[in-house]
Length: 596
Picture 1 (cartoon, helix red, strand yellow):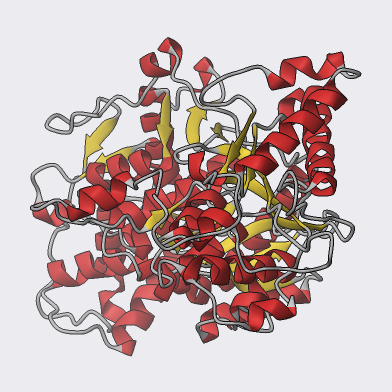
Picture 2 (tube, helix red, strand yellow):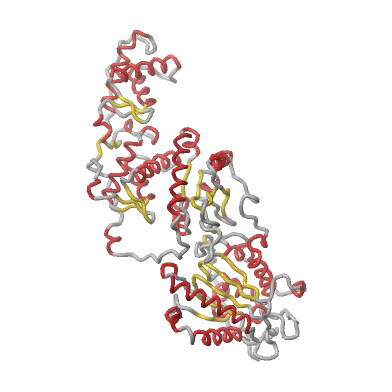
């Protein structure tokens, strides 16, 4: 009896292929370490069935920016006229013909669209069906010599036709499956599916259906609703029935309800962001994804059906779900960008404190994303190869044991003390107050108003919290100095004395008092620091950049406030055309753009 060609399964039948993983797990002393992140699949539907049916939903998977596309996801091709020739060749010729049509479609597609070319593999559930497909394909190819180059042999990327037991370790962009088994010449459907009926048959199915990077096409003469499936089945056939149903109906077959009908925003902050976006006329969906990692909200492209133009992440539960900042801030971002996302982050504190500015930036980001996505092709991402040029231009670490030459040490002002008998809020204190403000601003400008007030109060000998009378006197004096032209304002809450102060990046040095928070640094100074570091490095990722800028200003962490400041500076420079962001890296626009 032929093991591969026969659909009958016997209890004592010899198992030709032993699982290497099964042998390794049975060895003494080998510890299991499951890998939780899955990012091979460029569409979540490719892995969703296995994640829920075999891995108990433990895999962290990532949604793609394209929810629907002709070269993504899982597609079911029913063959209503298919007949399984049980009494003779034990194959399904009609099904083989449909498989060949799909193969020829992808061959023509790839040769006509070289930028979107795909790699392809065919998996049949029996050796007899694999042979039938090869014979039918060879017959069709005789009249199509122009397609021969697509079928060139290559172990890693070449076209193949294999049976279920031989496809282990193979990966292709598109995988076409042929079940082969079905109703015979007499209309009878038995529950024998060759290798799937054996012990561990469900593992073979799991391995096979997770081989595709972009698309699975399942060709079958039966569906998951056949009445014969109601009988008691082994695990392999039961999973086949469920996968047939999943391929036909999608994630709803697993009781997964992606989209607005199933999930809502996780916080009032996110609800407010969505309300704002919808008020601009855009359609937005919360919690994009089916498992593991979800993008907080996705803005649907108004002109490209089934595609998100922009993904928006907030500093909520999903952002903080990773215990490691490297995963949260860099790796997840890289995975999402590889899946076609353009990600925009909104920090809650910035949204509430600077609402008009944040809304303006968000609207601009959506508009830009829609414009950029208009030329998007649903092509496989290009294969990344390192070149000597990129190695040479990679990020050069800034040695901060010695501050860069374009920085200056931050000087802390020491204004002369006022007359001791005058209280700061009294009218007779105006002379001393004006003098002390100017003295501090001359040294530390541009300086945030709160920090300026603190410097003056410390020199005045005031302790404790500043009351309303002191704040009113300070504000009135500051406005008076502005009217006289002795000080100027920048970015609403910073004061400076000379324009030259705006062209300096100041670092703490060894003075503890010289340390400033992100809120105490002007956008202008942050942008200047970003420009200098990018110019020095030539090419740098956002993660590396923000790390170096944070270290430059003496910050040992990168919290939401710091991230908002630095990302805001980068975004502003990009929008002004002073730096370029491409493929996840930042570069200066030209050699002569060295900031002065």
